[in-house]
Amino acid sequence: MKFTKKDFLWGGATAANQIEGAWNVDGKTPVSTDIQPFTEMKDRTKVSAFNAVTREDVKKALSDTEHYYPKRYGNDHYNRYKEDIKLLAEAGMNIYRMSISWARIFPNGDDAKPNQKGIDFYRNIFNECHKHNMKIMVTMVHFDFPIAIGDKFGDWTNRKFIDLYMRYVETLFTEFGQDVDYWLPFNEMNVGLLVGHMQSGIYENEYKNPFSAKFQALHHQFVSVAKCVELSKKMKIKGTVGCMIAMITLYPYDCHPDNILAWYKEKQMLQDFFFDVLTTGEYKTYTKDMFKKFGASAPIVEKGDAEFIKNNSIEFITFSYYMSNVVKVTDGAADKTGGNLFGGTKNPFLEANEWGWQIDPVGLRYTLNNMWDKYQLPMLISENGLGFVEKMKDENDVIQDDYRISYLNDHFKAIQGAIDDGVDVFGYTMWGPIDLVSAGTSEFSKRYGLVYVDYDDYGKGTGNRYPKKSYKWFQDFMKTKELK
Ligand code: BG6
Image (cartoon, rainbow, N blue to C red; front, side):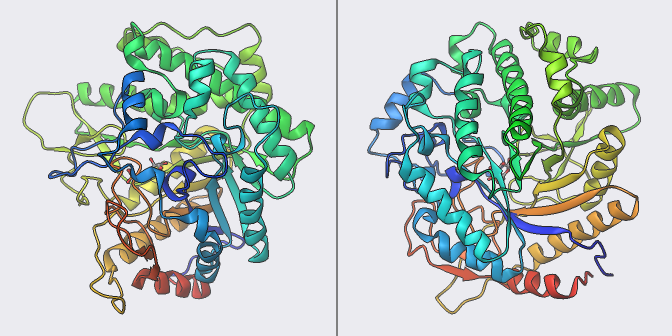
């Protein structure tokens, strides 16, 4: 079959904290992900870098000389960005999704002036993209909460963060407003429910109910997203502003009413809540139950917030989609499986990778339909891909990643299916087209790339880039748009 949609955007997605390295170079200060060490793992479904951290953990990690912290070094993109962008362009990609590190622009949060070296770095990247005729999507915060900002101003439960963040946003809009096509204020906002520190700076042990803190932080981020929309219009920048969640596509285990009800409530909490607030400004009735579930208090919403969010609603929707999960609350044995946020019950109809992420292209078509019916906003799938352990034997070896080719092929077919259903999908950026550090486990061995990078979990290797079989497959697909 052929992928028929014209002017569709095809690209790759990355995040500063997983690729750049240079964690303390040219003025950049440490961020929340720089303190996540690599841990040897036997069962890959059970390890997570997304643990609650304490102030003490941060202090220890910053003076630790024993462990290796992969996100400090990424895949050395800071020094290799020209080669990387050329590889993406030569694969045929016409959009690049990347993130800017707040700590590279305002290393101390309230610096009198932005850090010129940080601005220059991103300008160079954008120039490379323009040279190769690639559009640009920028995530302004992708899991990398600046530690120095936290030390001075606390965390996102403090409403003052909206101003701090907007100063950063205004700087980016001023510097890059004519370069960037799409802006995402935050990566996967719903991850904020699971981990407090990584994106919101919350030390969970310092709160009586960490969930109350996380909901409050999220509220301030919702208001910030609307402020980004407002500012983008005021400053007449070229790009539009959308937002993103991690799509946890869920199915009820069976037609037992208890499983249906539990599935519905979990879906409201993990998916609906975020785009419902961002498009209407409202905390719908179901949120009461959601706060209750966590024994959390509802966030303090200032007068005018709801109206403001509604009047400055996001212009497009993006989500990451890797897998689907199953909800089961009824008694009886069922295997469990892993997942990027919350694991779930195993779906007997699906295969999974080593991390237990269940492969489900049809779920993508279902999800796109569901999101379109609910919000009627144009959509881009901002992450998707298959993590796999791979090892090149020698310099001339080419990784034969047929499993990745078939994963991509099937997901592209699902997108075409949704387009045929009448859904407005305008683009797709695959996760980690050049191997990078895993967000969830901090390992390098979980490779998503079309391009292999010669680093191991401890950063040993040349860092050289080697296209895999899937690179050539993608190149051909971009020319023919043929799918199997
Ligand atoms: C998304 C994140 O949750 O999933 C990325 O936005 C992340 O940062 C990606 O890398 C894949 O997850 P992981 O844990 O396999 O790296």
